[in-house]
Each structure stands twice: as C-alpha cells, then as structure tokens.
Image (tube, rainbow, N blue to C red; front, side, top):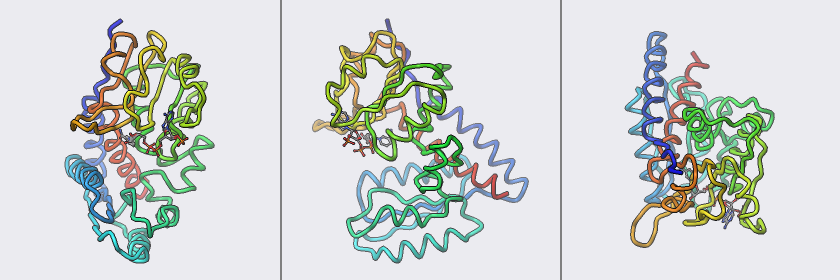
Length: 282
Ligand code: NAP
C-alpha cells in the first residue's frame, strides 16, 4: 500500500481563500478583523511562529497588532495590556505566545484574556465548552487536524482513534474533538505501558509527543491514517515529526508529512477563529 500524503499546505491554502471571502464580507459591514499578538522574550522558535502568524494575518486581510516585551518584563504590564485589549473594538483576538518566562503564571495570563477574544481556545470557559461539545474557539492545532481529516474525506464516526500525547494544547483537546465526532478514543502519554498495544488498534493515529521516531511501522495497523503533529529539530538540522514517515508511507492509507502537514493548518485555524470572533462582534 502506498499512502496518500496529506498536503497541509494545499488544504490550508484552500481554507485561506474561503477566509479571504469572509474578510471581504466583514469589510462591507465596516469591520476589519484584528488580532493582537503578545510575545515576551526572544525565544527563537517563538519569534518564527509569531512572524508566521503576523504574515498569515496580512495575507487574508486581518489587521495584526504586535506587542513585544523583554524577557524580564513585569507580568503586571502584560496583564494590564490584556485588560485594555479586552475592551478594544478593533481587536477580536488576543494571543499570548507560549512559553512565557518563569516569573509568569501562564494560567493567570490565559484566564485574563476575555473568553470572547480567546482565539487560541485556552481560557477555562472555552475548555469547558469543548468538554460539552459547544466551544466557540476550538484550539487551533487539533482543530486543524479535524479540518485535514474532513478535507480528505476520512470518516471519524465509529473509528478507533488513538491520540499519543495528552497536553492541554494538543492531546487532550484533540481527544475531546474526536470523541465529539463519535470516534472511540484512547489517550496515551509518557507513562503508558506498552504504547504499541494501543497504537496497533488505531484506525486513526494522532501523534503529538515531541519524540522523533516514536511511532514505527510495526506499531501501526496496515491501512491506518497517521496524523503527525510532532515537530522535532534533529542535531543535523532536519525537521521531523514523531512518526517514521519513510517506513510508514508504504503501510498506511494516509499520512501527514513534517513539515507541510499539520503545521500550516494551525496558523490557518487561528485566522479562522479570529475571523469568527469578528463575525460575532459584527
Ligand atoms: P508537551 O506539552 O511536551 O506534551 C507532550 C505529550 O506527549 C505529553 O502528554 C507526554 O506525556 C507525551 N509523551 C512524551 N513522550 C512520550 C512517549 N515516549 N510516549 C507516549 N507519550 C509521550 O508537547 P505539546 O505542546 O503537546 O506538543 C507535542 C508535539 O507537537 C511537539 O513536538 C510540538 O512541537 C508539536 N506541536 C506542533 C504543532 C503544530 O502546529 N504542528 C502545534 C503544537 C505542538 P506526559 O503527559 O505523561 O508527560
């Protein structure tokens, strides 16, 4: 079997052209969607992510406002800024780029963002909405995975799904979203004993552990769908996912590459959430 390589860049481009149309419709009502991006410190990976997000906003017609703080910034300055952004009519989404320096309480920062502008979907109100299947802002990476599956016509209902990784930003919301779509979901994490006995049962395997080569062909059922969320930089500079792409591509029915799979979708769903917020405000 030769896998269909799921092209996240192409799916992303198709979704972004629909997003542009929604931005034009908002313009007719006098609204331009606005996203505020707050970055603290100079983490090189974060700087790249922020740059990509700002550029992507410009491409679809979202206005972006970048707020940079030094690594030793007083958390109160960021909390005050968030309070101000919560009230601004030109700002429909607020994003704080993680990680934050150690003097910050991430949960305090995230809970200060108005639930109505929480385009990352990390506020407890939105997390609760996700649990009951009624969230306004689905977290961007798992939302992107769902959109990839839908775009490829991969049925979710009734499927055995295994999610490897149980973080608050990827694994847990991913499991909830797929459960909401009537999959039977198992969640594995670093303390799971004998990972392979779970992964081998998966019709759809989503991997988000941040461990290169964690998933090898003998752990995966022939014909399964493998969605690789992981992003790992190898010592030789190469960027790889968590799955052995070369080994798996002759065994599974669909697989996402790294880079060019889930990554572009994450930014696209951030744009989508920001536009949805502006539509609600309009
Ligand atoms: P994280 O917070 O470090 O969580 C990793 C999760 O994987 C944890 O639940 C951990 O288990 C589990 N895990 C670690 N080693 C494992 C192992 N050997 N077997 C099974 N489970 C294991 O990471 P994250 O933020 O969720 O991100 C995960 C990966 O996705 C990273 O590579 C990250 O760069 C990537 N990512 C990509 C995108 C994108 O847009 N493509 C977006 C976000 C993240 P415990 O809970 O037991 O520690």
